Image 1 (cartoon, rainbow, N blue to C red):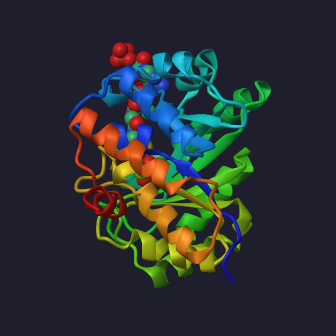
Image 2: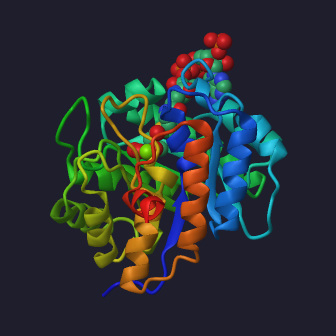
Length: 298
Ligand code: HMG
Ligand code: MG
């Protein structure tokens, strides 16, 4: 059975733009965020508080948050790998933060410069301080269907790290196929394995489309009970620490599929496509949503 409703978490402004060579000016990010919200997006990542030496594309996150035209009922989230990041996120008024771990040791080292165990102990004070400020914390697990350095990743390991993030106090765990290598049967097995440790209603999927499998994998995850899906406008994105990782599933393509399945996402597809095409045109970015491309030649 498929869900009646899906919550989409729009990650384009963060996951999308962190990986673009071109650094998008703060005004451009703000315009995109306004456009996304006008199309009905209610949950989005607006930036990340990480080292600007590591990810210069996100160096203006504090400005982005300070200058948001906030709308009631919209969650503006930020990635925060450590206390320094969380303190900056609090100062800037993030409505939600995310800590991000991995199911692969090698990826954890490359991405956040520490082991999985170290990352979890680093996250504990982050979650505590966030809750003192009434800020909900989301958890990410990267490499849930494969790692660019280690290859195959055990699903048990994915389940364990997910359970640990929940124990720390995350309200939801987003399962990242960072390099988009999964296929539907594996996606379903992964969800089934993780949901033995974390209730499926607290799982989200975050699938990159590197191998063109993201929509199929999402459908498999929905059939396995997942109701929260991360996606990125125009299919922007990738992870700078995962070579060859291309964008997340495009939000337009996801909404098109959900519409066809009769699943409500609250997002207006025409408006979204308009916002996406305008953003790509204004910033000379490649449009990678098939639906947006199809509509722009109609
Ligand atoms: P580190 O070098 O181990 O940290 O980096 P450190 O505490 O030793 O600090 C080193 C320097 O960084 C210091 O500056 C700190 O002040 C600074 P210096 O003295 O050299 O001038 N620093 C910071 N600056 C700003 N904000 C901070 C911060 N923390 C330290 N929060 C660190 C550790 C995590 C900071 C670093 O490895 C980093 O920034 N990594 C970036 C990771 C990242 O953004 N990756 C992409 C996002 S994750 C992703 O895309 C996957 C996901 O989409 C899911 C999926 O697809 O799988 C979520
Ligand atoms: Mg990602």
